[in-house]
Image (cartoon, rainbow, N blue to C red; front, side):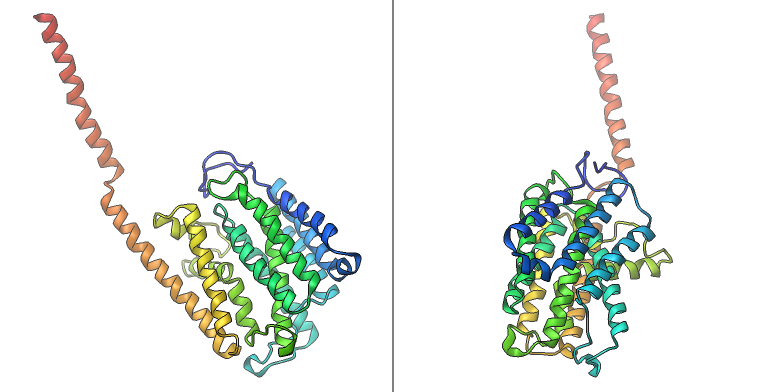
Length: 354
C-alpha cells in the first residue's frame, strides 16, 4: 500500500504494485500471439524485461539501495545489448561520425538504457501519467516496427499497449491502484530498449525498407522527450542550488502543472498532447538529418519548459494574492466569533431577568 504524506500528493492508502497485473498479462499474451520462432527473436528482451520486473517488485516490497537497483538494471541492459545486439552502432552521420568501436557502442547503449529507464521511473508521480505517456510511444513503435518488417517487436509493442490500457482503467484519476516500481521500471526499460532499436534501424536501413526518419537520434529523443526533459531539468536545477541531483523534491514538470490549478487528468492530457506534438514534428521533418532536427527538438523543449516555468510562477503569485494568509483567517474568525458568543450569553441573561 502507498501511504499518503511527505512528497505524496494522493489521499488515503492505495495499492502500489499494479505493475504485477500488466507485466504478467504481457507474458501471457506473448505466449498466445507469438509462435516459437518469433519468441526466439526476442527471447533476450523478454528475459531482461522479466528481470527488470523482479527488480521493481523487490524494490516495492523492500526498499533496495541505489547500488542494488543499478546492478539489476545493468544485468538486464547487458542481456539486450550484448546478447541480443540491440545497441547504438554509431552516430549515423551526426558530426560526420558513422561507425564507433564496438566497446564504445556497448558502453553508450547500456548507459543510455539505464538513464532512460530511471528517467521514466521519475515521471511516475501522477494518476495515469506514466501509463499514458508510454501508451503513445508503444503505439508509435508498434506501427513503425511493422513498417520495418520487425514483426516480433511490433507484436510485443502492441501487447504492451493492451496491457497498459487495461491498467489505465484503474489508474486514471482518481486512481484506484498505482503501478509502483514494479511497473514503471519494467515499462521504462522496454521503452528504452525499443527506442534504441528504433534509432539504430532508422540509422542503418535503406529508404525502401520502410518509413525512414533521416534524423534517427532526434526522432528517438522526441519519442521520450517528457522523461528526458524532466530529468535533465530537475538535475540541473538541483545542482545549481548546491543539492544532490538525486535528492527528491516537488520540482517535476507535473508538479508545476498541478500548481497552476490543473487536475491530475488535465496534467496528463496536457503532457500527452505535447508528446504528440513532438511526434508530429519528426514526421514533418523526416527528410532532414540530425544536424537540423536535434537542435530543433532540444530548443523547442527548452523554450516550452521555460514558458511553463514562467506561467506557473505568475499563476502561483496570482493565487497567493487572492488567498489571504492562514493566520489572518484564523484571527478574523476569532474576532468574529467572540462577540457573537458574548451576545448570546447577554441575551439569555436579559431574558431571565425579565
